[in-house]
Image 1 (cartoon, rainbow, N blue to C red):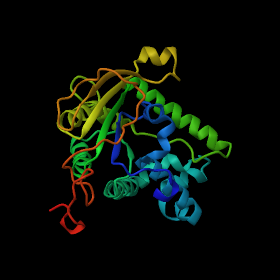
Image 2: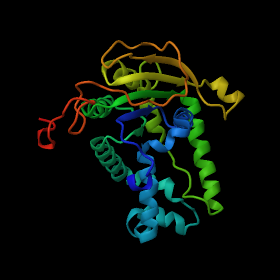
Image 3: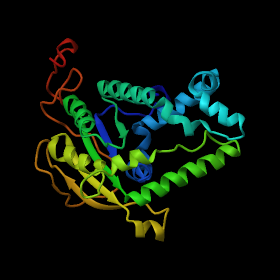
Image 4: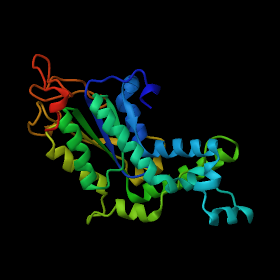
Length: 284
């Protein structure tokens, strides 16, 4: 994937993009990165699912290996299934590939967007630990909608994806099981785990220079389904490890910029002016 994005820079910038399925993360990502989006490598397990399925269709393993016998029987009875409807069958493989791409990208210092639900606090801390140890400047962006909006968007995305596939465009709509939605919105107050975990890592990690939360209510969704979520929280650190305080000013659609981080080891070097350890010394 790295070779497909020749414009990706390696200045140790990362955007950690969190939120429930269907929250509108892609819209916010495009809004924030703007003209500079080609400078970032996007890491998304859902993209990996589509790549895996396309490859399986090409080498015929989709029918011979991935598709379960029960699905083949129902197809023989007249039902039709599109590949992305079976994307959960390549979940483990897609997660592995996304993690490998993330690790390799961080080792190179590539500027990255990690697009994830962030429903696991353990995984959230793991990702932030990798970025922090590598000396990244991180912006955390959490995009939130109520569960009813998430559920409806999942259904709409699935239906519209299948309609396009019926016309020969794409692999169909990806279905998200309702059990996963119940898990994502499993906080005691009914809010989402991604919201709690995004705030947690933003508060805990000194590598986070900016933390933003975007919200769209059910009423706003009814009024204008195409409108993006609204920025409701914007906090920053003036220096690495400093306090997280309300952002005073600046555009809300601003991608992270590279900044010098004195004393932070970055893949064999520190910030300008300080020699870093040799490759063999890294991580010890």
